Length: 150
Image 1: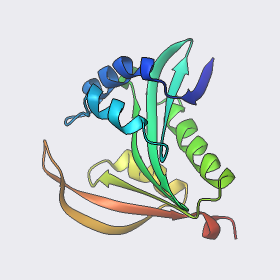
Image 2: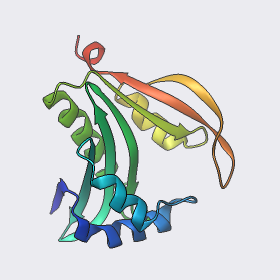
Image 3: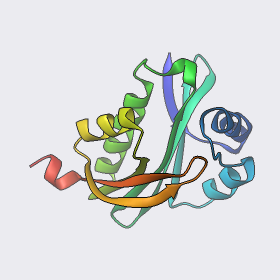
Image 4: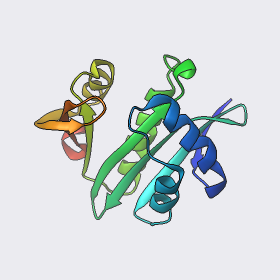
């Protein structure tokens, strides 16, 4: 059984452990602890059989959403959980009246770019050397929710 729920402080050890396993420049436990305390940051845990297998978070200010991160354990990828998280984000933003969603993605992350484009995201600009370890350019992508449903 899969569930998506608001992230709690008790989740942070597991979330930061997942972060270390899947990202080359992971956020620390303290980074997550600091970021979830602000009401404009919305973080969620992806729970399968009572175990956190992933998470995602975004910052919402007025009518704009910026996705910070989406992380799924490597062994749980390819099962549609990232897609479910992404659909949750879009529905959540629609429900609270968000007009635009933005995100940054590594230029070489073809799988993620394909998923984002499937949902209507468009590349807005290339960001030189945005990512470190390894250094790589990124893309700023944007979804106009009003445009998506016209």
